[in-house]
Image 1 (cartoon, rainbow, N blue to C red):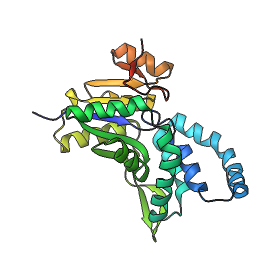
Image 2 (spheres, rainbow, N blue to C red):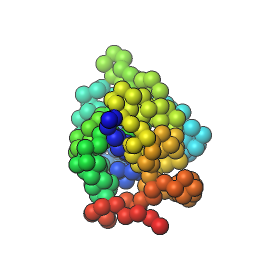
Image 3 (cartoon, one colour):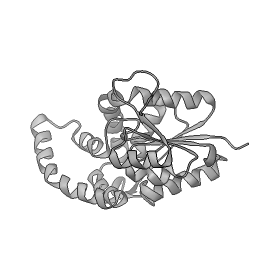
Image 4 (tube, rainbow, N blue to C red):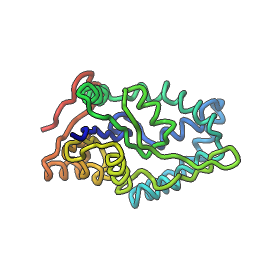
Length: 232
């Protein structure tokens, strides 16, 4: 019999943060306070542009936004990602989400984190919560530094769902018996690939879609230390 999988989105589902916060923190780590303020002042005017791209297509947003990482070296990004995890991500892990990961792991399900965030960041989250594997974005390298371009397709929307489908086929996972958890409308295609989808902390439109499909609906709050609470 094929194994069951449990596919977890990361940003907004496991962690109360997002790719923009990660990038800002990583790019400004180690800067003196005055330089950090100056960098952020230069970045703020670009936010409306990135928000508009995200509303149009998350994959397009990721391709544009990840240019922020050039020309950081792989070793430097790894070092900064570790620092980011310790001071920014670890405190923002949602306890109920971490508990749900543990439930699936204890049942023998294969736990996979699926995220448009960079592999260097997602791997640290996976190691901490005990996930079996990750599907995440990778950046191309030229002359020893990241170019800011994503390898292959962005992990977003339908391509995120396609990545889950491909992973399941390669690892003998039954999608019809599998679970998926996500918090964004962009994740609808991924949720629709599994037999047991659930939405987490959904906005109005995602909640409407979940109720129409009779999917699970969960509130995973930073103040909830135990099992997930199911929304009514």
